Length: 242
Image 1 (tube, rainbow, N blue to C red):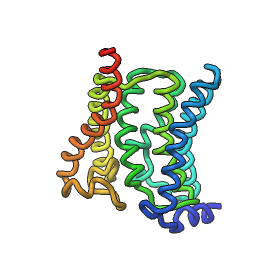
Image 2 (tube, one colour):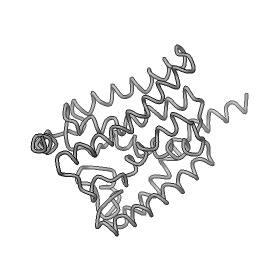
Image 3 (cartoon, helix red, strand yellow):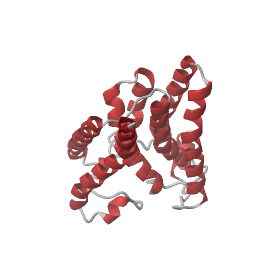
């Protein structure tokens, strides 16, 4: 069993940037982002809306947990690689809190984390395996599924990002950065890509060498946050003018 799982997880199945797997996954994700929240909002009872939201949240969370279990079975689990100190993994574990209890502050933090980092990951995915490998679906669910959960919370639960939430999320991002620095120091790891860039192509490749790309990344993240907030700013401004 161990050898079989280890062989499966480590067998190469190259992912091609903007290849068929990438484009098809993106198209399906966009269809779900639009279609599922709209259908739930207009056709489901409140109890069913809540149930669907909880299911989405637990699918996203379980996606990371299943990966950890498989790595443990394969005997390849590594505390330097597989703990939840990458932003997307931590957000995956936290999203059921939003989908069940709908706390405003946690939604704000996860919204700006999700709509900046997750959408960037969709464009330049940090994934090494293509369809139909587990790692392909793990990445798709962990990132695009996270965006689906956030859009669902906005459309169905009427949670809305705010300017205050933007700054709170940015503060939370930097606190998470400090946490990852501590973990990296203790474990000699590279969580949150603080000690080096990811092995696959990413936006970090255009931000200069270490450690400057970390500082540049702060400004890029803030720009992403502002872009994620902009539609709601203009909608609110338009409502005020009306």
